[in-house]
Amino acid sequence: MKVLLYAGSLNLVNKSGIGQAIRHQKKALEHLNIDHTTDSKEDFDIVHLNTIFPNSLLMSWWAKRKGKKVVYYAHSTMEDFRNSFIGSNILAPLFKKWISYCYNNGDIIITPTEYSKSILDTYGLQRPVFSLSNGIDTHFFHKNTEARNRFRKKYQMDDNQKVIISVGHFMERKGIDDFIELAKQLPEYEFYWFGHTSMNLVPAKIKKAMKQEIPNLHFPGFINREELRDAYCGSDLFLFLTHEETEGIVLLEALAAKIPVLVRDIPIYEQWLTENVHVYKAKQFLSFKEKIVKIVEKEAPDLTENGYKLALEKDIRNISKKLVELYYVGEETFEEVN
Image 1 (cartoon, one colour):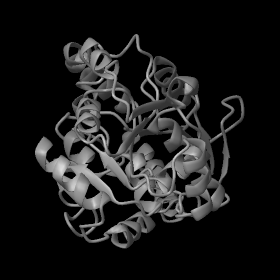
Image 2: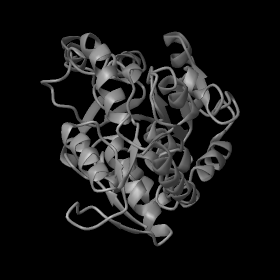
Image 3: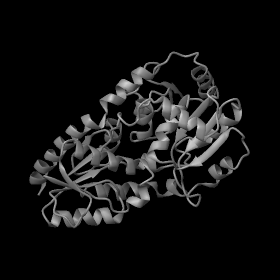
């Protein structure tokens, strides 16, 4: 079995969770010594698609004509497309039709969580849908004193300064507006939002919020994998204010780095993350503010070891075995539907 990890338009998603997922898939195949390539000119048995761009759809058509198997990884839903970029809410119904058409061109569909699978199950897709985490490299995103020191030195902070971070695109769905307001109301802490989005795509409401003069709020932009690990290790809290996710790779990274985590209490995390056991949760703004203070000032119990155990369950070395099992399921499904 040889797998093509199709990387068409990778430059458009390289700085997103999808780009990280593709890197995880490559690492998973390497872990099991599964023959793979990113060069579509080479021969292959299965093509693994991660994006819903037209070139990926064309690749699925071409692969099927050549008798190859097609695995479509469903990273996106209509629900997590809403409240993202300019015009996303208007385009959401069309986006749903488009991704459904794309996913139906796979022999099987994989999506990161049971929650996202439950959403896709309502779309009337004609192919079987399986859930499998994007995975996390716990060997890389581990707690590290040297990494902490590098982060603190780079941003010129002493060891006593309290730092709260988040990671993601500049989207209302990601909760960046609440992040900004929390920074304004908690001036004693430093707030860092890592990530980049073209301002041409950012709604006016978010642009206006980001332009406020808030001395303790920082937008350093996109940082590489090593710098992001240092940021996790050097901060006192990972604040994940997202309103909708299919999983959240950055959340897995934070858990692996043993950093305290506070998430918005949304359906995807109801079954997986137990409140006050693995992470802290909040729904209302005031609750977020109160819990941030308690966690950062160490007035709340340390849950990081429990969170780390969850990250270990989703370690890429465990995910790799399940991924290959699904490839074989895909081969059987291919025979059934063709």
